[in-house]
Picture 1 (cartoon, rainbow, N blue to C red):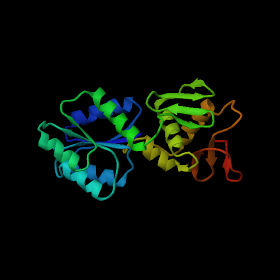
Picture 2 (picture 1 turned 45 degrees about the horizontal axis):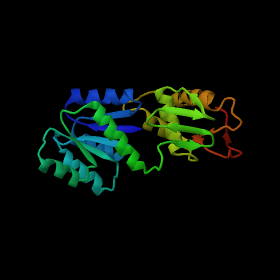
Picture 3 (picture 1 turned 30 degrees about the vertical axis):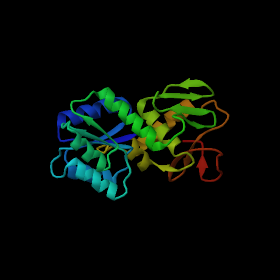
Picture 4 (picture 1 turned 30 degrees about the horizontal axis):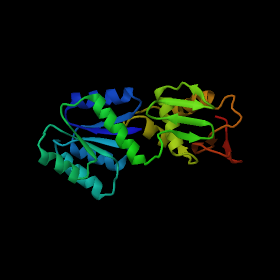
Amino acid sequence: MRILVVDDEHRLANSVKKGLAEEGFAVDVAYDGEEGQYMAETEEYDLIVLDVMLPKVDGVTVCKELRSKNIKTPIIMLTAKSNIEDRIAGLDGGADDYLTKPFSFLELRSRIQALIRRSKQEATLVLKIADLEIDPLKHIVKRSDNLITLTSKEFAILEYLLRHKDEVLTRTMIIEHVWDYNFEGMSNIVDAFIAAIRRKVDRGAKVKLIHTVHGVGYKIGLPLDKGKISADA
């Protein structure tokens, strides 16, 4: 999951980024409303944490602009103001939830998980294909009821593949979703992670689920098409 945090309080924004990164999220940070709006419009995010009081463009205006452009990414508004009028302004502007500063990181994390779950409109939290299943909130991966241990980045990549099963994802798409905005590594890092995931998920299994689409990227799905697609790295 990829999250955008927009807050001009650098210490708070970086603290939230660190906490969410430890939970396995890819997190980008913007420190003013203008930059935050640009990133929200040009990048794909699963959720936006948006402060109300921002330089250049305030958070409520940013929220309204995003909604006017049909960007439906869930938004949690942060505000140092606690009166009802400010809460109503944020929600009327298109926000899905709000938190009043100071707030508990655990509460923010719980609200993020609830909003993402609701936005995906899933009947179940568990993602499945064949005998493979993952629980994004509990960070559990199983295949044929055997637990599989993945690193946070491996888990994020596998979750991204499963949320787009049967779709071909390019290396660039995977990097942009799983790593943050400032990542400057090489695209072959994706190949290395896919190889590691394959060793843990597909090795020893009768049915291979993770496939290479040569010259394009990777997909997870059944059945395996012939030709350009292979189960080899």
